Picture 1 (cartoon, rainbow, N blue to C red):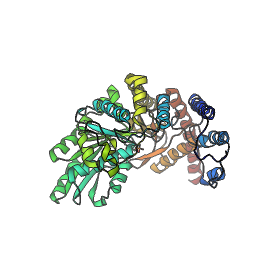
Picture 2 (cartoon, helix red, strand yellow; picture 1 turned 90 degrees about the vertical axis):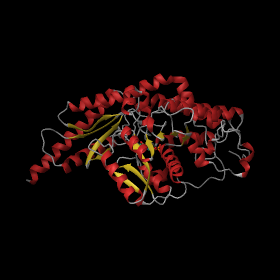
Picture 3 (cartoon, rainbow, N blue to C red; picture 1 turned 60 degrees about the horizontal axis):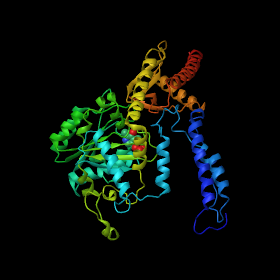
Length: 486
Ligand SMILES: *Cc1c(COP(=O)(O)O)cnc(C)c1O
């Protein structure tokens, strides 16, 4: 392309370029289930493909696009693939993808009311939908969309600390469990707490925060004249789906006047299903809740959300006016979301949530989530009937952990670890499915997170069958080695 100092394309160029992109996305939606969910590569291989100096002269726009479609977009795991069982999948949905495209196309500034009142209003409306689902007060309550769960947790902890401690937090202590998501620890470090101000409460055999140990820790800290200010409960641990005893923690927090933050980034969406709702009982007592629409609410990246019991807590914490924003104050009912969180310039995240729920209806989301919870249960039942699998953590909110542990053998823990690690490695290198291990109670186990509503029971059975074949093969090898060495 010749030098183009206004960075514009003609109408025809824009159309053909844009249609090509839409065709590519639609083709991806149509074919992704039959692609491999796995792509692994090294830095050297990627450098060989992409490393170059920034070009002084542009190339033909079609050539750049073709190169990206043919190369860049193929060198990635497919997080919305039905056989990607690891991490937290990102099932996404087409309506929201298009909504994001619109929000970017119009480059809407979703920071202040005056700049984009409809964007602010849609954020208020959709946050209200969420407040209502979680039974937080809709009049007083509030919230904000963030880039993800990590930023929502960070925003929550800054708010909790400001409300509870002001700017002297030298004696403040925060409580979490050994299953709390790492983003909370990152946030704690980011906002300048020392290690001595953090208590990691052990979990019980079901991976729930031990209430007794929490009470002990708080009492001890009070005796030391410290200031317990926040407990982080988890509603859907990323490892196991486990929900902490929220009601009991809420009771302690109320008595002790401690902020109760619930990290429901993984499990929060389960509030839409009957079963999930009963598992999440007590979440309505939280002061703040993190949910992550780019997980089980099927939104494309990036979208997290923080909900709070009182919206003033956010504005108290984050309002900070530069001079050039003086003239666009507005009145308090017209929310400037830059006053409710860390970002000033913000993309219009509410649009995809709004359009997908308006288009599909909550009912579709409820059924999708029920489906996942049941799929994990069915998987558990299937595994329990087998002589070679042991359930390590039963199906909870769509997550199940299990390991290869044949009845007929008396393998040491170490050998079982080797077998299960190898099963995962071989499944991944077969590119058939993405199934990684996690560690629970010092055991290496396989973890399946089944929140993709397009994952069929048949997909899961195929993957388990393949794992069994790999397991049997390794088992045989290990036995042969044992025979030789004895
Ligand atoms: C995924 C997750 C997070 C982090 O969210 P991001 O969107 O990845 O930043 C925090 N907490 C829990 C429980 C999670 O599962």
